[in-house]
Length: 407
Image (tube, rainbow, N blue to C red; front, side):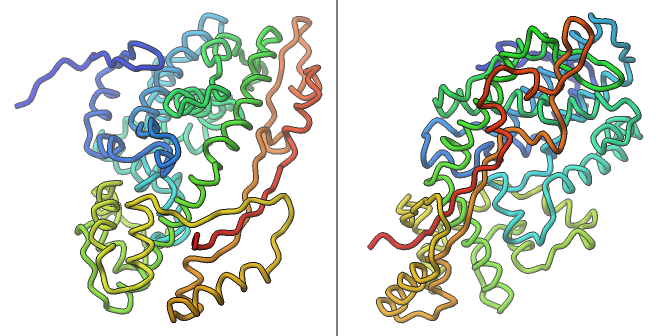
């Protein structure tokens, strides 16, 4: 029988040493569902732009748990009562919040799994683990679903200023080298408090929150919505769509058993049962990359060329505009491609397409970041801040793009 020390320490390049607080957390980290996150990239295809962006969802989940430990300590110090059970549930909920991500983080949600979000799959993993761990995840699931009566606990997991964002901005900034995204997450956590069951930031922390919102906006434009990352992710989605389309028509494609299962079956939220969850748990970035390495030599013109573009980083040209792009521009590129390679419009549309992206750093209409003044007055960050640009950050900025072959 395997026995091991369950209070291990991880050395993290962002925070230094991360400790595992108890045996349950250790067992969850050891579980194959969680270990799979070592093979899921945190930033999808961004490594094609930033060579250092090879960190994984495993790194991120561990970082989030570390920040949650800090947050619990800070809140308890300030007199907020958090029971031992609630503490463990917070660690479990934040540790597993991203466990449902598929290969390259977001590409699968829009291609071979029909409208099943990673949050929904995370919940299914948590419920399955809850059965395995004799109900010890029940409270964590309540908090994750925002059904627990103490609202601030849900806000620590998912809000405009949660432990998830506090880690990924700092971590992604570090691994990409985009210094503008670096935030002082420790300072923000030190300024946390709870009033009337809601999370607030003490007045002294207002500048750290302003920096956090500005950093979020800049990281979206410079990293998450970088035009090369964008075109690469669009290509990956189209690779998976084409592979599924061909598989549905009976074309045999080389793929791992797990990937083959998703290519050959129609998966929706309604039929996503334990058997499908088991198949999903075997799927990671390596399945997709090894498949594309094979598909770049297949007979299908579309799948062959799309796979080759990603594997060899010879991507489509992308143009970003502030105004909507005219349909004639797309039609011009479509006709050119159809004529050059003698392909149908359906095939050409895999290589010529338009879309839009939106960046909104702060959604004050969804859930507000509230500042606690020394007088006890509570005010929303936009009203409390003397930074004029915070109001601008709450308005979505939309840009439009068109992609087409370079030559």
